Image (cartoon, rainbow, N blue to C red; front, side):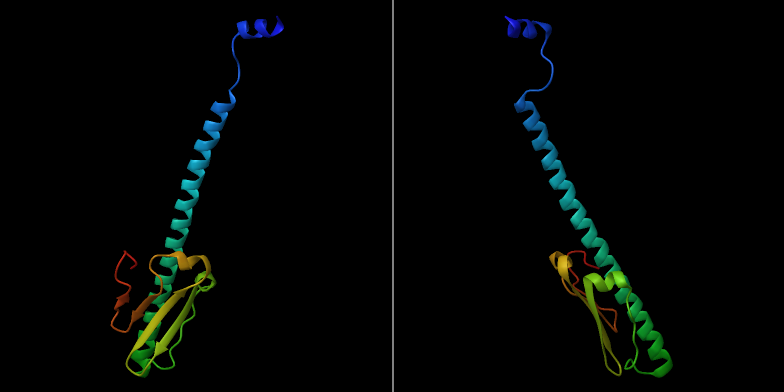
Length: 130
């Protein structure tokens, strides 16, 4: 008789099924948010590497203006870029190539290795990498 009286007062609370549906929706939204965050962080790290390569090219051009050679010119990127990319400069007397090879979680980036040469040719030129 007691159980019957409680039902008469009105049902309060959630059923297990309703609770599981809410938990599932929250899990799906969380998964979408995390994947979006990962994409955004990879994209911002790529932007930092592109900035580093552009600054390195500028430094090498200034060095060339004074010395008439790219050999001996150098540039060091910030620590944040060096955490996610290995930046290297290949110099010759009249040309250079600056490249940034992704490391760790940045290897999942669709662009892969970024490079910039003395003619300001950027690679890869696809997938909105530059």
